[in-house]
Structure formats: C-alpha cells, structure tokens
Length: 412
Image 1: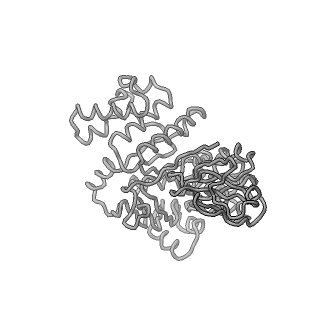
Image 2 (image 1 turned 45 degrees about the vertical axis):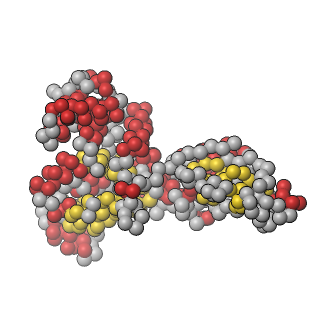
Image 3 (image 1 turned 90 degrees about the vertical axis):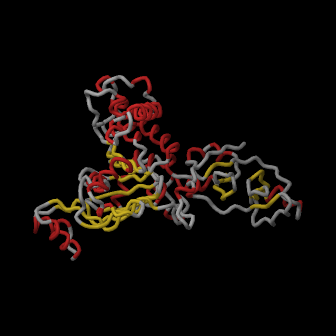
C-alpha cells in the first residue's frame, strides 16, 4: 500500500545565484520608539539599558527592540505574540505606515527607509498590499468597486480594471456577489473581498494584520484553508500577524514569536513545537496537536537501500529492512534481513514486504495507519526519491515530546 503527498519546491524565480532560496525581505536591528525623545532612547538601548529602565528614565516606549530576520521569496512568515508584543507595530514598519527609529529594511535589496515619497507610494501601490483585521471596505461601493479601488488609483483603464477585479473575485469564490454592498455579506465574505482587493494589484508581498481574528471560529478555519490554497497557487511572500498559536502553526512556513518588542524565536512549526527556545514559547505551544504539526521530514532516519541489480547488503541486525530502489532512487519494495538471511548475496530484486511511502511534508497523523504494518515508512521528496525512513517508535517519540532528547528535528 502506497500513499503520497506533494511538497512545494521553489521555482527558479525564488532562487538566488547560488541556487538557495532568494531573500525577499531583510530586516536588521530594527527599533521603533514611541515617546518624546526617541533618538535618546535608542542611544540608551545601544548602551545596554533595558526597555523598562529607558521608559522609567525618559518616558519613551521601546515598541520594537533590535529585531532582525530574513524572509525568503514566496514564504509565509507568521509573526505571533500577545497583545502589546509589538507585532502590529512591526508590520506597519514594513510598509512605512510607521517610520522605524533606527535599523534597516531591505526589499529585494532596496532600502525601504531611503525611498522617496514617490518611490514609497509606488511600493505601496504595486509591490506590497495590506489586508486589515476589520476589512476596511467602503460601504457605499459595490464589491467589485471595492476590489478595483487599487487599480483605479493606478489609473488603469476601466475595462481592464473591471476584468482584473472580476478575475480575483472568482479566485476567492465571490463572482456572484460583484454588485452587492459590503453590508449584504457575511464577515468571512467581507474578508474575502479585502483579500481580493489586495490581490488585484498583483503585489509581490501581502501584509496581513490579524485578518481573521474578527471572524467566527468556523469561518476563520475556512479562511485559513482558503489562504493556504491561494498561496499554493499564487506563491506570494506573505507576512501574517496573529496572536493565535494554532493559526500560526497552520499557516506559517516559519513562525517568529515576539515578546515585549523582541523576537524570541524564529523557527518552522515543527521546530517550534519540538524545540521551543524557552518557557515563554513552551507555554504557547502547550496543548498544541503535535500530530498535525510535526512533519515526517523532521524525524527521518537514514535508510538502508539497494538497487534491483545490486546484492542485498549483509543484515546488521535481525529484522533490518532494506529498501529496494530503482535507478531514480524511488522505492519500489522492501526486503527484511530475516526473510533474506538464507539467501546470502541474493540481489535486491527479491522484495517481499508491503510498505508505505509518504512525503517529507506529511504530518504524523498520516503515519498512524502505517505504524500497524510493522515496516518503517519510506519518506520521499516531491519526485518520490527516497529520503529516509521513519519507524513507528519515531512517531510515538515525537508525539510524546521526546524530540529534544534525540537531537531535535533537524530536517523540518
């Protein structure tokens, strides 16, 4: 029995000259101070005083405290934290709705803080779009008119902007609501309009500030699923703000956890759940459904393999499984040490056990049925090449929070 799942691989536009994933957003030592003397506060901060001392001495509040991170092209980067952690201030610095007090922000290598007013206006109109928590729709305009607003500001001809607005409304499933007013739509539908409006200008970057937090739980889950599907198809760079850990882990390729203006940890969902940086992060992920977060690729072990034309390797231990692979390194069968011990140097064409193969991106839930077959799971990449194996004991150890004891989850 064979089951497979696919994992998205970056295309050529998302890679740099070395073949690595291209950095889209680069933030270094970003500071945002609110108060009467922000420059003085920055000097004290750089001299080693903490945010509480600075506030007590100067009346300035350090909203963003020397934050640094990179975001790759087409990544969904989630910033998560409690109210007052600085996450919404951070996203407003990323499109210059707020001007940072110090530090640098680069978008595709261009210094955002050095942009002129004209360049900044163009950046907001064409390269980065914002999706707000409370929809921010114009009540006196139709759904179609709300969606085409950014295109109208860009002075696109009426026919062209109407066609493009209609296309993105179809993309979010609202084609039949073009002539409706926002008040006639549910909360989830209104947020779809807000998302369509952001997508209409075809921006490189989507900035999403708690866009689903005002929605009912069921509608919120539907919108999360919708965003995952849209991202699979459109491959935007998304910076998503939330206070909900489950939402962060569901949506994020990586998650940055903020506390009092600082980033405590940046990690993949599996790394965050398996190796929280400190008690603050551990408290966030307590109670999280580990089976839906941890991916098989994060607990994979080296596979013993042989090609069909090669002799079977000598068994290192009773019950050892040898995965038989074709010339493209795709698993086509397994042979156990027990069953082949009597065959000596027989070729790997002898394969006598059923096996399950799953993607490196599959979660632990997908592995549960396979744990009953007694043979390790073959973990494959999107081209179905064998990456390694996962044993039932690996799955159970991950569920029981034993990742740190085994060195964590290095392949997440």
